[in-house]
Length: 388
Image 1: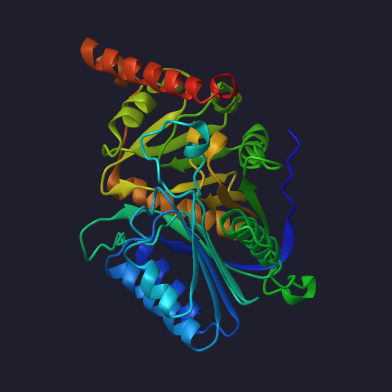
Image 2 (image 1 turned 135 degrees about the vertical axis):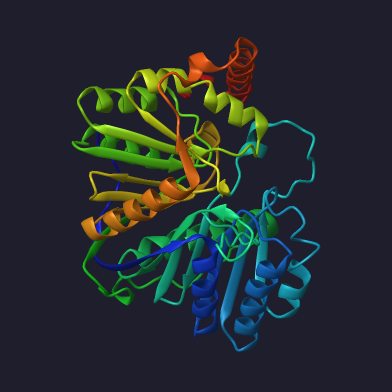
């Protein structure tokens, strides 16, 4: 399957495990910014972590750095009344994507959320991943938070990241204030090679890039020869995705999926478990992560293809939300991610036996099947039922 992934060489990529590694790296980069900081987050909470990041952003703005912050109107519903006023007073430009003025009106466009977690600092550093601005350190020395990943990026792949963030900002300024707003164009020569790793930046939107992330997954799965390891917080793949995994298992590829073991959203949790029987019968290994909440959205295929980002494998990410993933073609990076996932699986997950579904009581199976059907009906109401 053809994809739109454009791999750029010459990058230096640093894998960051959960908030305990991500937030110090992000705050350090903001503190060292000289020209601009641009941040996007689905959630920006008024807690200790949120205030630490906000403090760094305000300090940057006060020393003359151009600081732009974009948050989602649903995920960061309280942002406009908590952190946004202080940020604005310090000179930070902040916008809210699709504010939830009419929370109880069910309309399809209101389900289109900004789910990306991105940051770009000068022409030096970017961050791509799935970690929100919230107290989710997942530090072994503290109470478990959410297990997730981000990548610190240096090199040529910064260019599409910065261009993407700027383009959305310009559109939203027009939508909110009905005035034209143009940022200075990013010079292509400004992101010089910093390493030897190949990476592509992929987004999902509702215009030109509706299926870019899904196509990248499907192409990598179709070409897999040895192993597929997917860790996903909210996993409800469509028929095409499930068939691709099943075909890979049939041709001898070891397919393993690390999924949420704790219940966060009950309907989606049970709907996902309704797929277990067919996946296990297809020879796919399923692991449930229980040490903390699994929030990761990553995959490693054949220990040379890897992705880290914000996109879940469910209809909300693949059909509705704005998402962003980094896809990496590099054996060293892929091996590091696989090793990290392997440690998490060994210490905090359990593998389900092939007979798992049959061992459940009949009423438990019925509940999960009903949850899946109910969620499919809800997807149908959005107009996307035949596309997933």
